[in-house]
Length: 126
Image (cartoon, rainbow, N blue to C red):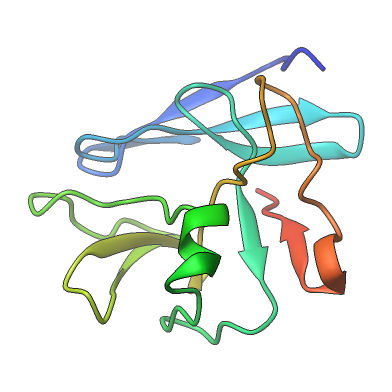
């Protein structure tokens, strides 16, 4: 599915409807299921029901299948976008407190094959 009306965001400098994410890009995109958050490559982002606000519970094999959206050391929280420190010392972007992930089976921009996996993975919505 081709993404339409993407809105680039970076989380260092904020503009109305746009935020710059030092070293990362999160965009608003449109999928077959409506508006979703995507990374800079247009790949859909997901949230995990077993996470809690500002706490990731996806490690080891889970993190291989659901790669965390990594935040650089220079990245700073901005608005609805925050950063959680993972137990391995890496930093991960959050949206409204919930850690963000991609899905290893999504092969092209606009794919949303991770939505509903095991009933605990869901598309991240703007």
